Image 1: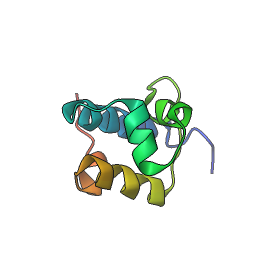
Image 2 (image 1 turned 180 degrees about the horizontal axis):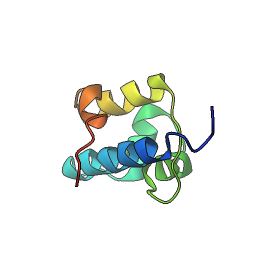
Image 3 (image 1 turned 120 degrees about the vertical axis):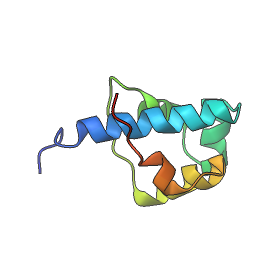
Amino acid sequence: MKQNEYANEFKMLGLNIAYYRKLRGITQLQLAEKIDISRTHMSNIEAPNMPTAISMETLFAIAHALDVPASALLEFRKA
């Protein structure tokens, strides 16, 4: 599998995470601390110019911390 094969999906996932995080009024650092990852890693996950793969465990932890279903983070809207 090519590394960039899912780059667009990872980008949209990161944007959804950033959207729900901001909706909840928490910082990247606060979210990172809640799920026990570094702020830098959290920043990389959300950065649209740097598509970053994450594990299912991290996805579920983020969804739980943001109090949204994991499916909401994977719901990609077309522009």
